[in-house]
Amino acid sequence: MTYTDEHLRSYLAGSLDPETARQIEADLENDPILEQRLLALEGLLPVVQQGFAEIPEADHLKELEHKIFAQPTAANDHAPSPSFVRTWGARAATLMVGLAMGTSLMYWADDTPDWRQEVASYQALYVKKTIASLDRSEHELKQELVAASAAVGQQLNLSDLNDLDGLKLLRTQVLGHEGAPLIQIVFADPNGAPVAFCILKDTDAAGTSMQSTSLKGMASADWTGNGYRYLVIGGQNQSRIDTVAEQIHSRVL
Image (cartoon, rainbow, N blue to C red):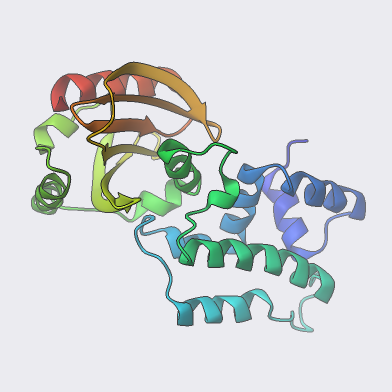
């Protein structure tokens, strides 16, 4: 079943009709995207808004747990029942604690996850509002690319990342995956939706040609070469993602 944001907000408020609420509960067991949508609507998204490099500290998680389990005020006529708050709160808290412990949202990953699945799990949390406030100057963008180049050992130039099928470069971050540097370069498409280009250093990676696939419901394209793994991901426009990936492949490699 497809749920609108209004359905999910009513579910979180405890005012959704019981039958639909039970269906959502059942679907949550097997639908990671639905769970991520609920996290975003619940207001937990800001914890990861700055990118998946920033893991909340223990004290912050304790605060979050208290907020999740806080009882509704009497002024709220549509306040959820204590049992509902406990059920969804426990689910949300478990996910956030898993993030803090470094499991990196593996709860949402497939049975045989790889780095692309993990990146896709985080990318699925990004919405237009997540990146709307990113406003780097050209100097700041160049400095971020210098830091990223040094970390991953590959030259990344601002000129190579401009004019990518209408994408606007917003930010570059130095992250990591299993001890190896991982670069996340964030763009906005012409509609303001988030798209990411990621580079993972892997000296054992054999060269592969570009392949297109859907990861967590998003269009993506990936390839490997010269000791690196590359991934472009975001939105549902596979044609745009393929074009951007081909442009990056011809410029960066």
